[in-house]
Length: 299
Image (cartoon, rainbow, N blue to C red; front, side, top):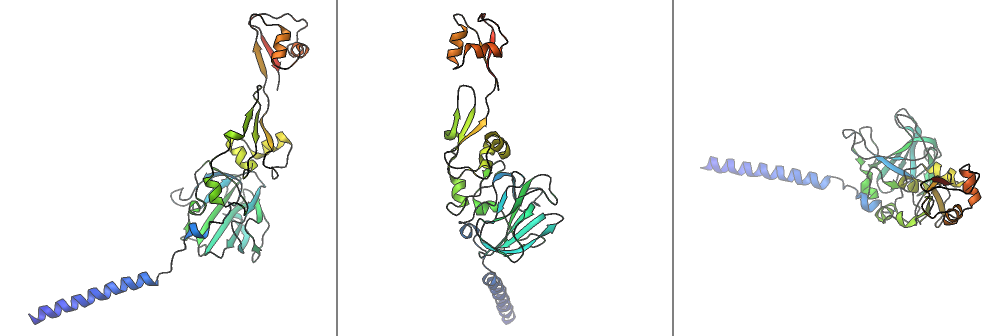
């Protein structure tokens, strides 16, 4: 009986020791940083469209990809110190920034780097230009977030959507400055439809809204920012709220002659002249026929 009690007592002591060991381990573990709270003031690192997200490629993709125009600006998501700035065979031109909130961010495949190692950078500061250097198949920014510090095995990598509140492929993002943070912009309803104007000749215009960029507008219309810039003869980095942008130029307009139509009535209907219609259709007289297709306006 005494032997049984002694064994029971020893087993109890061992169980208590094991419990204390686990409890002690929990208390000694460093607290994980609360990314959403620590990054509320962050801005997106570039204007463009998300083309790949965290965890793809069998879990090997430890960041997000933002595609944009070659040479478009890349910004620091927060203030910090540049911990690395160099050329890597995989990352290409890359910049690492350590921030005061226990995170380190990575900006890869840059065309050019503007910030050197040891340099202090501010929130939203332009640190480079988007490119396709290193192991890259197209122009984009590869962006990563790591708690504490970046490691070769990327064990500290965090899904950027935790910080920015969104991250679906195809979504347009824009680097809004200090006035508005990234998460607020992500949650804002789209204004694209209310900003669209179409006239009778199928020209499409877009009225720029606060917070929009040429890259986000271009993504909505499945265009490149450079195309819209060329069409409007503007600098792609400088657009303003209320600006009217031509998105789709006029195409050829045709009209099928109906009973009772005259060349003059058709011209008046389309705000043009009979002579213009005759010239477009290589006609010498005002005579037209029912069912005849007339070119009213060319691109």
